Length: 384
Image (cartoon, rainbow, N blue to C red):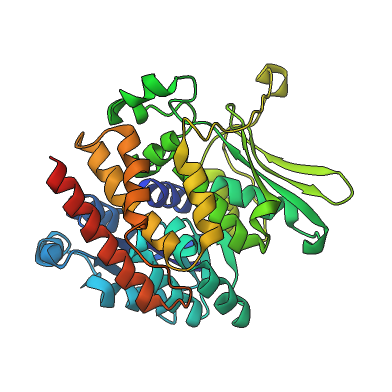
């Protein structure tokens, strides 16, 4: 039975993964981690009985320890605790579903320890793809994408020669504001952006979907995951979210992966790879499906997508700056401290404050990430 460590077990991906684990009976939860949600992770420990539980925010360590003192579980905290549970000899798979660059160092250490990586943490490849992918390749460690789009591309490429790829077609739902004009979007608050038409996701990712930054981050991830150039990636708006992404080959054929919009499908695929098992997920009824439509993304109404694509081409530390700025700005938008287009405008402003550096290390990325977050927080504070 596969032993799994889940980084971010209280988030959307983590909770769905636990549902899958409970239903399938094919895996054993080795460790659960969260940032600060003591009550929720204590309930998970009670239910899934892991050997380890880690809380990243050390100020909540004693509270968590007291909450689970009646259970046979080792309680750890902070980065040291995260690193221990991703490198432990008993662990087979590390599911990285935390939000932010907190997932970078644990992912690196898990790869170095030879663990299979089920990757749902976008920031790892956005900021450090040129470090992560060569490292995984050199150690023959599989990185299995959990994003529905990248899982779709991964499945389309299974058994295909990489050199035969002409183009990756990355589908986007268009988010909650797809039908609104720029003037209308300008007035939209976070509570409206959170009403995604198709997907049930975490709050941060749902806002990123509304700005199309989510697709920009996935664009960068796709470059590193599938070893293609930016010119070989095209974003296509597909509102129905039935085709999760496509690959166009040099012989003009196109392969698509389809399914109902349910994040459990890519999670299951990553955990079970290369096997497929029967499950109870909803099936597509093609007789009731209706039309499948496609269009180009509007980068004037949704400038975050263009920012991300341009940032990938710049490279160096700039994806780290962009990603960190976006994360703080999305949090501010969720708190109604800024408006929708303040996100893209401020990302560009912050990036202009950094001189690019092309030589990357994990330490440099984490340092720039921290500096960017502080700069953005200061900007927001001064504008209140």
